[in-house]
Length: 378
Image (tube, rainbow, N blue to C red; front, side):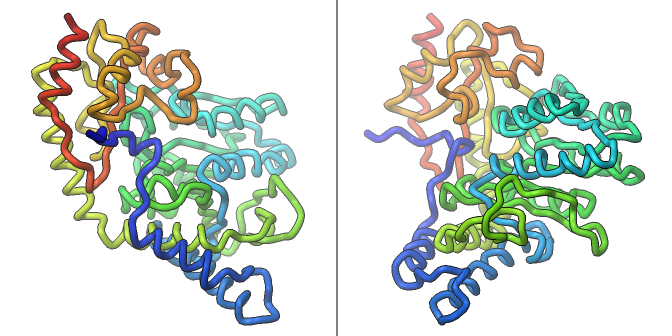
């Protein structure tokens, strides 16, 4: 018996249509998009431009505002570290973020702090989101950037990015949203034109690993003052050098297209799975982490008091594949910084498990899952 995969916030399976697209551009259309002297290169460039358009349509951006990267981690680094030179020149050295961000944001912020930037990390509410009032209270005239995730990767709690962006209507601060978990799943909020920068990742939306994008919305006709982190080629409008992996771009583009096309259907299926999950786990009296009414439709975060998460994961591994936090820090046995920021003790944080699914996830044998967890409770 194969365990049911319930770790889609770590990565998702690729859709068959995406796989077909990738194989086509690995075998039949293998040209370099930078080669302008023959049809192979021209067709590759056309494919890359179409992928750019497919991604842009999801967030209602222009094709010219999409810069391809290796994934959301690189996009986050480019958005944050790429603004450093401008911030220093303009003497705007204050950055606002939150204590529940992914390490792909928190670690670049640590580097910026070492360069003389003043970093304010907002604490979440008990429900797990950042309060717009807290953001407004900490804005300063020298605030360069506000960087806040859209959906937390561990809890699935949705941050109110529309209300947060409203706080910035009369401020020049750049607004960056890490949308690794929400791109293609929550459509309307990311179309807000006050969001300047959006980080996305292909493998969270049934696309390939190793590819993502940074949306860089212009302000009027002005490009954002981002400097590249690498040099040597000038690709991606000077933001990121290197030969474009056309097959991966085509896969990301197809995944983005499918996410937009099937958004409502996928959401309905995920919501139905969630309702079944809530009902099946209710007899175990779990403690839910964060407000369930503000959680993305594909995620559950909970703990069974007195039962260590590692013990649960080991005992249920033949039934369901789950995690106890971010895949990027799964090598660490330290308590989750997200759980600690939400007010849990270290012991409580080590009891938290995360379940995350997608629209075609098979229903597990919940009776067997409950039996295992009840045994651990005893």
